[in-house]
Length: 429
Ligand code: PLP
Image 1: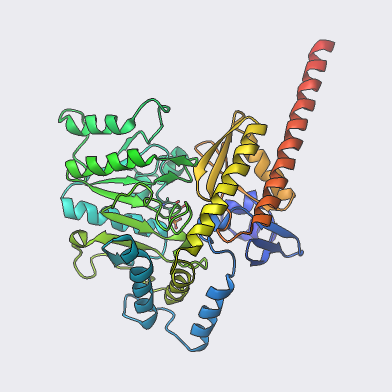
Image 2: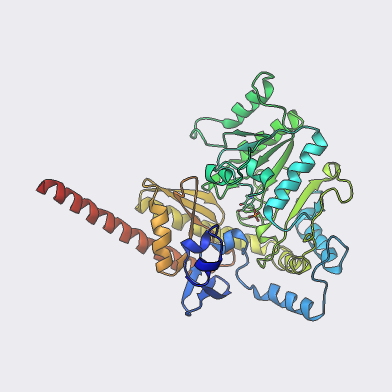
């Protein structure tokens, strides 16, 4: 495809799964250069929870730009940043009884994770970090060291160290409580695991295959972290900002992490923005100790404040999310049952894993031909991953599910036909 194949690096990836040249997008619909419309069950890998070009957010941004508002501000104080800090405090932190300082690292998720790891190591004076099997925390070296996926790790081309990987909740099946294993290892001075600076966790592993940690397990993690003088870091980059039904994915477990990383849908508009939220006593940075040119993405501050004020100032949005989540859960469960899969997930972050590990990939390809954008996740891309914008209507959700059902039926027919042909061929021999 021109000019991409000729000029762009081989590293490109999503464009290989979704081979079209996209031109515009609105809500949950993306349009390519030939005017073909696609329904979006991918939402910018979770960066577009409020849909593409959300009109309220766009309006605020247009007004800001037309008023010559500051676009780039390093970490200088600006009106846009003040409004975001106030909105975050008023609509998110205060109502949840959370007292956090807000750090603006570089604008990507991996920047937030790097910063969280740095400050945890500084505060505790320890280097080791506990991370989990199937975790995904980003592609820079510190975050990559805490990531499980072998192919992603291989891209580092240097040893990735200072992280101990332990089994996530459910890793050995429902009958083994892996928090007991973690606790036993940390209690034992001879286990070979150095005392950790932090325990870094996703409450739902999105890239890792939609693995959901139970509330009990998360509470145990918090208790174990406290007992061992380690900080609990929740990486809420993909599962946060409403994705699991509440603003923070850890609210259901009623835990209070020492550090929280947010990014992706924080700006609400697909603009790069991330924050690290820290308990006040954790905020032991020296001025400038962690810097970066693009920490002051004021356009993202404007849309982030608009999103928090527009969607999180009362409980109506959360109630709406609960209804949509129940609906999606039921639809996904039905599909899983009809096609011998296992349904997983929370809120509007869901998945189906099939017996045939290649099926999810084939369905993603077929769905794209039928104008639905849906991704896979998991170590072997074996999980079909549902990540629709939170503002997607029930009709659109139904439409997407119908496309997937048709694709699954077509794949099943194709498989049966291939099997019959194989049997016929071997009988003829
Ligand atoms: N952490 C989690 C849980 C993620 O899902 C991701 C990205 O998918 C990241 C960190 C890295 O974010 P970014 O790609 O913006 O660096």
